[in-house]
Image 1 (cartoon, rainbow, N blue to C red):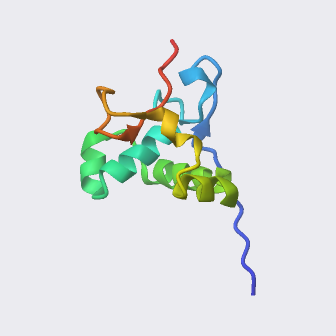
Image 2: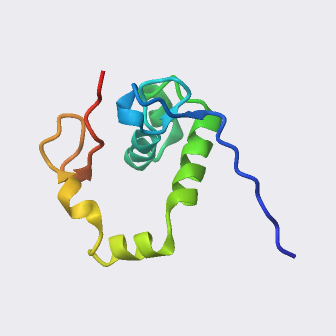
Length: 109
């Protein structure tokens, strides 16, 4: 039996005046992409909560759902085989990123 999920993104907002229109968590200046990076950086949820106390469980779930909904098999395959667009966005000198991590676009205020 096939089960279908209905994805809701009521915690994800998009405002052209905030972070260049990137999907953000609620009305915070925290992009969904940054939440995904933080999940990878802090696999222990308690560490993640200490670093980002404003995040709620539903924020994290919806950021993960958004990433899954936006990832196509072609994109995933290109990234895994080294032919994806990530090469140009890898930075080892961004002040908030560990060496070799993918950085998000600069904030627009």
